[in-house]
Length: 176
Image (tube, rainbow, N blue to C red):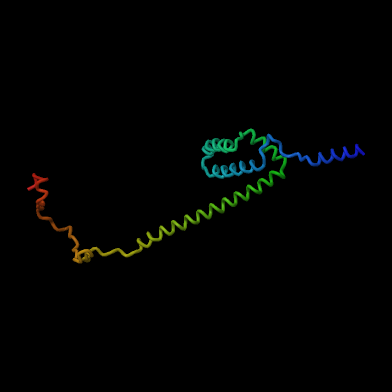
C-alpha cells in the first residue's frame, strides 16, 4: 500500500510539473513586444529606397530595440530558436502581434483621414477667395471713414516739382 501511494504521488508530481519556458529564454509576453517593435521597424526599413542605406540605418535601430528590452541579439536569436521549436506558442504570439499591427494600421488611417479633412477645410476658404470676382480698381471708391470719393491715381501724369513740407526743411537743409 505504501508503494502504491508513493507511486501515485510520483505520478502526480510529474503530471503537475509543466516543462515551461526556460529562464534563459525571453518569456512570451516580452517576446511579443520585441517582435512587434521589430516588425514595425521592418516596415519602416522597407520604405527606404536604397538597400545599402537601409542596412546602415536598421542596424542601430535593432540594437535600440534590444537595449529597450534589456537583451542582446544573441539572446534574441536563442529565444527565436526556442520558439521555432515550439510553433504552438509562436503562432499564438503572432496572432496577437497581427491583431496589434492591424489595430495600429486602422488608427493611423483614421488619423490621416482627420488630417485630410482639416486640410480640406483650410483649403476651402482659399479656393473661395480665388474664385471670388476681382474688384474693379478703375471705378472710384468711397472711403468709408470719411465718406469721400477716392479717385484713382493716374501714374502716367508727370509730377511737377515737389515742395518739401515745412517741418522737414530743418531735417533736410540741402533741399530748397
